[in-house]
Image (cartoon, rainbow, N blue to C red; front, side, top):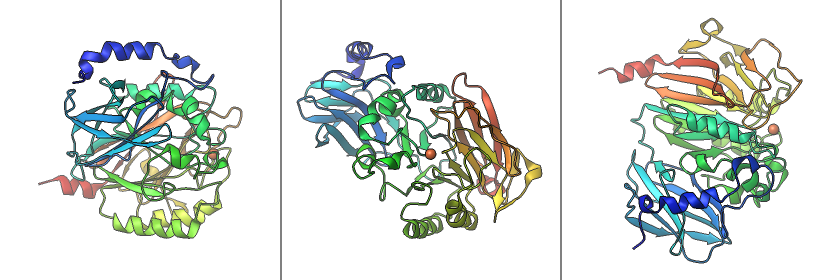
Length: 407
Ligand SMILES: [Fe+2]
C-alpha cells in the first residue's frame, strides 16, 4: 500500500525545493521534476464533482487518490492525451473538503495539504468569497505577486474568475506553464478558476490552445455555473466584436432567464463596454450585452483589458443611477461595472480620467479584487498585490435577501 501524504511530505518538499524558485518563473519553461511538467489544477468544481488536470510524461498509469481525510480511500484512473492527464471526480458530497494526490504508477507526483478542494455547498450557502482578476500571464513575472496576495487573503477565496488575457502574448499552449501554470501552481492546486477569453487568448486558435488548457462547461467560450446562492456567467468578447454573437447573446438571455432566482448574479467578460480608462468604449458590448444585463438585473459585471482598476456607478439603460449612495449601495437599480485588469500587467503613463460614470479608479498598480457574499450583502474589495493594501471597497445590500433570511 502507498503511504499517505502525511508520511511522505518530506519527500515531496524535497522535490519542490529542487524545482526552480519563483523568481525564475518568467525566464524559461520551468520543469518541476523529470517527467512531471505541470502541477495539478482544479476545474469545473460543483456540488458533486470536480476535474483534476495535470501534465506528466512519466511512465505509469495516471491515478488520482482522493477522499475526505489525508488517507484518501478512493482511486480513479485519469484519461491521457499525450502527456496531459485529467479526470472528473464524481459522486462527491456537497460542501465537503477532499484531499487528493496524483501519481504515475506508484510514483507520487503531487500530494500534501495544498492538494485539496471543497465542493460547492449549493444554493443554501450564503457565505462565500471569490476573487477576480485579469490580464495575468506575462513574461515579466508580476503575476506571482497577485497569486501570493490572493493566498494571504482572509477569508481565502473559494474560487476565482479570470477576465481574459490569461496568457500573453498569443494565448499559446506552449507559454502556459511558464507564464501561468507554474507561477500560480500554489493557487491552482486548491482554488478552482473559471477563465474567460481575451483578445490575446484569441491570437492562437482556441481550439488548439485554450480548449486544451481548460476544462470548462458548454463550449468553453461562454458558459455559466452556480456557486453558493450565486450564478456566474463567463462571456467571450473575442477581439472586441463578440464571439458567435447572435448565438451567444441568445444563450445569455436564456441562461439568465433560467437562473433568475439566484441570490446574486455575476457576469464577466474581457472588454469593458463603458470605460474611462485608456481603452475606448466597446460598442458591441454596449449594444448587445448591456441591455441583457439590464433586463435581468445583473448585480456586478467584471472585465479586464485595461491594465487598471476602475469602478463605475450603477448603470442601467446607459444612465447612472443611485450615485448618491456610493460606495454603500442598498438595492441599486443598475449594474455595477468593474475593470480589474492588472493581475500581472500595468499600463504606465496613460492615466484614467474622471469622466462621469467612474466612481473610483487606480492605475499603475498590480492588483486583484475580492468579493465576499455574506447574507444580503456583497462586499467588493480591491487589493494591491504587492502589499495587500486595500485600494477600494464597495458594498451592495439587497433587501429582499434580508427578508428571505428572516424567519
Ligand atoms: Fe485585452
